Length: 123
Image 1 (cartoon, helix red, strand yellow):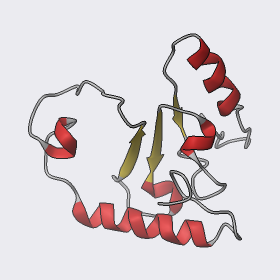
Image 2 (tube, rainbow, N blue to C red):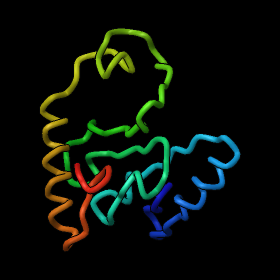
Image 3 (cartoon, rainbow, N blue to C red):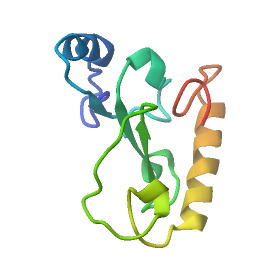
C-alpha cells in the first residue's frame, strides 16, 4: 500500500521494490488512496504492478486500473473472452471507464503543479 487511508502513512515503495527486485521478487502496490492526492509515478516507484480505483478520485464506482510493467504477463483467474488482451472476460463498462479518465484528469489538475494521476506523468 503506497498510502494508508486512515492515518496517511506513506510507505517506502521505491526502496521496497529495489530490495525485492534484488532478490528476484515482483512488486505490486495498492495506490488507491494515493492517486489523486499525490503524484504516483510507476517508473519512479519501480513497481511491476499498481492498482488504482476510480471512486477514490470522485469517479464512478466499479472502475479501476491495473498497471502492469511492459513485458509482465499475468494469468487470468477466469478464462473467458479476449477483453483486456485476454486478461479478463465480460463487457467493459465504457461509461465508468470514461468517467474514471475524467476523474484522473481533474485529479491531476488539482495537484497544484504535481503531474500525474497514474503512470509517468500521464493518466
